[in-house]
Image 1 (cartoon, one colour):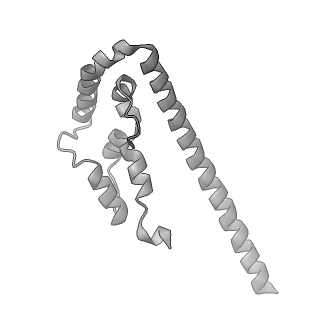
Image 2 (cartoon, one colour; image 1 turned 45 degrees about the horizontal axis):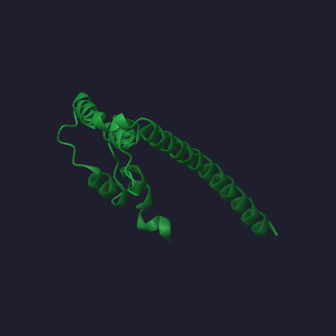
Length: 130
């Protein structure tokens, strides 16, 4: 009887943790969806934004220089770190998250292309899949 109670307690703990993680991830995903939809609507209502794409690219390059990431290994390093259970420097994570790329996203949203942060989320380590 005590073992069954222990299993139920453990089940409840993991269900609560799953609900918490799902709520947080769902909220972040919803925020990203609304930000992307807003950027797409902004781009559709202001077609001249396309001409600001070079300025947005320069702003993104400035952010890389400001965070001293001129020799950034790219999103492949994040995927590799995820698979090999290594940490990703906060500076690199800040540049991959959609916020810094918002200027270029607003100027020309990539229809059907996944941003790097979604690719990183999809590449879960093998232990998470079993």
